[in-house]
Amino acid sequence: MPTVLITGLTGFIALHMADRFLSEGYNVRGTVRSKEKGEHVLWLPAFRQAAADGRLQYCVVEDVITGDYTRAMKGVDVVLHAASPVNMSNDQTWEEIRDPAVNGTMAVHLAAAKESSVKHVVHLSSFASMCNWLETMEEQDGRVYDETSWNPITENEAARLPDTLSKERLIALGGMIGGIRYCASKKFSELAALEISRRPEVNCKLTVLCPPTVLGPTLDTITPPAQQGWSVGTFVALLAGKQAPVPPAALLNYVDVRDLAQAAIRAVERGVDGRLGVAAGHYDHQLIADRMRTLFPHLGERIPLGHLGEYPSIKGPKNTLNSAKASELLGLSYRPFDETVRGAVESISSMERM
Image (cartoon, rainbow, N blue to C red; front, side):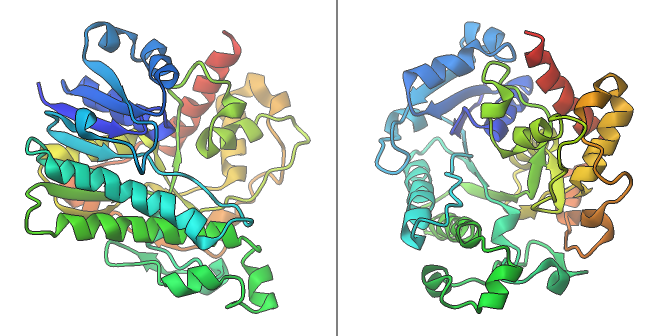
């Protein structure tokens, strides 16, 4: 059986990647930062059988930048780099946001390049590396991004923020300097991966997946939902009570985490090189709330009313991630939005009953 190494195994997306590769007969090895985190994964209901069968293992790499990946990489056929810090702090410098992301990417890709058994690397990037985050959505309305699109921000611009923006522009962008820098770090991490892949001594294929917001069920049924990340947090916030606010969606395009995992394994199976945008369509938090109310009427008192039927993220100014290339090369189709909502809510509800 081939073996895939997944970095950052405890992550929301990485767990689904592991689950999908296991279901297709791969052995999975994942990097974690501590033994405790590794044992946590092995104890999750979705993975107990694979762990007992020896098909799911973990390898401790305490630091994603300075850690030694030699043992983790030994004998693997595929490397899926999913570990990347999410840092949107307005209080940190560009270097403090950029360096862990870029240097961590380089450490993994350089280690993969040295391991002769590795034939394919999948790099999990983001729509953040494609989109222009220095423009408002009104300015981007109708714009379509694809694999040829790059976030235009430069290193110099990212470092000098907010000095390069007028007060009016900064307000229009929501004051999210850390968010803009985070998106820039995704771009420069991806560029680092591409540069390494083009070196003459590197003989493995590289697939780069660029998803927007990733939604769907969590496989971490032990960690309380409120302590999990953004994707799970979206649904936790929309179960906070009938009078709770419905926040605007930060990103307007989405993909189900299970479809993203399917894209990764299809890329490996079909030997696809290159960059792929992976998106199912547009979403809105009010739409999620309204669909939750229909799908789970018994939860009605917990679901915010908001403004029924008003979906500014869908009906208002918006950009679009065109994923036609992924559909063509990977034979990829996307599950209905209701299935994404249902899966997410059911996974959270199952934990609340435990």
